[in-house]
Structures are given as C-alpha cells and as structure tokens.
Length: 75
Image (cartoon, rainbow, N blue to C red; front, side, top):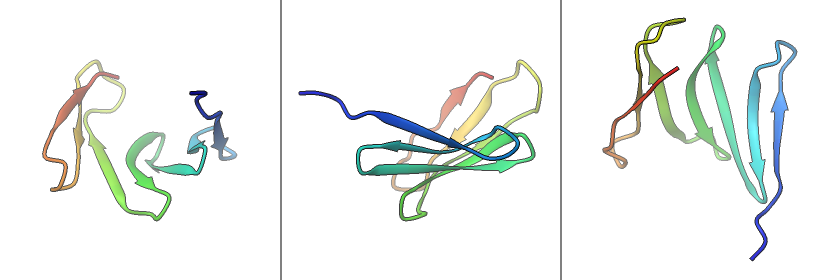
C-alpha cells in the first residue's frame, strides 16, 4: 500500500498553517510564534499546547475530553 503524499502550507511569517495528506487536512493555530492548537479539516479541536516559551521545559499537549491522554512534548 502506497502512502499518500504530504503537503504543508505556510503563512507570510513562515509558520506552518496546515498539513494535507490525501483527503485529510489539519490546521495549526498560533499564539505568537508558538503553536497553540491543532484543528482537523472541519475545524474541530484535536489538541492544544501550553508551556514556557523559548525554554527547555516540556510543553503540555492537551487533547479534548474524548482523548484523555496528556503527553509531554519537549521543545
């Protein structure tokens, strides 16, 4: 099975704004220069991010109530 090509779109500030794989699109929402949330193609919230900016502290990845897992992401 061949995987679909993946395409990315960027805004004028060179921030990734979307990821397109086959018929699936995800959008990235920013707070300044940091990704604050991911949305699906229907603009449903997939996850939010929080954490100290420009640090080695882990950011927290929060998923909506139907996805109970919270994951630490290092940036």
